[in-house]
Length: 289
Image (cartoon, rainbow, N blue to C red; front, side):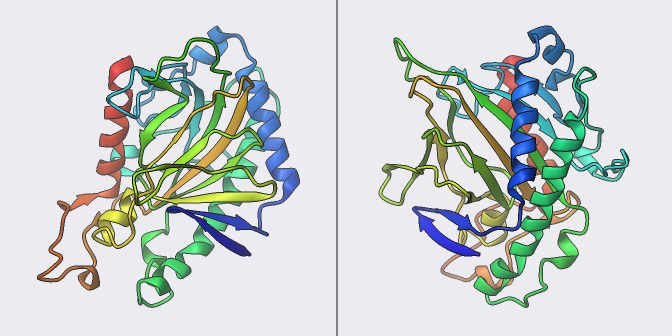
């Protein structure tokens, strides 16, 4: 696995997710988003207690200063290929919802989901060692992977541009880190330490890794969340698949002792991972209830 860094994002090459697995998931996403709006809306995310299902154009607003995010989405969480889900995820407990008219869709999407989860779990020892912690420090905190995955479709944004409408507004992700597959259309931008937006130009065969809020809270900002956005103004459609990998939902996000000192006191209140993620999702979707 080769690693390169762009601002606060990392690009990974030679990862373990098979190309065929990715291609099938992307094809499944394209089939879903081409469905009639009525079929997609039947799975509206607002009907789900744990934010699973379909998000319409402008249905979420990640940047409160904007008017909405110009993309469609489809969200899932943990589910075995056999169909069983978990009933002990606290604030995030609930089942996935699936379209009825797309044979093979669920299997293709879950196959990629589980491949991305396996790859994500393999990264935790690297984060532990970077914090001078035992390699297995996070093992007992990711026993029930709290991973949310999204299929995202960004329509072309052309003509007269409203700067308050972007593919997805500036934000940080809520979990430990995000594994992002993106197609060849440039749109992702990362805010660097100088406050400048840097284009994360797509590189074939790679995944982008962005740090999220759970690691920021755990490490007292030793690991800082990646501020990013997507601006699709190239006149063509864009697809991406982020998997947001978080700690088990019942784990308390409390600053690690090694990341706190007299000069650097704890910055964040203690909260469980599940409560934190749900509160952020509630705020994101509040404007479209």
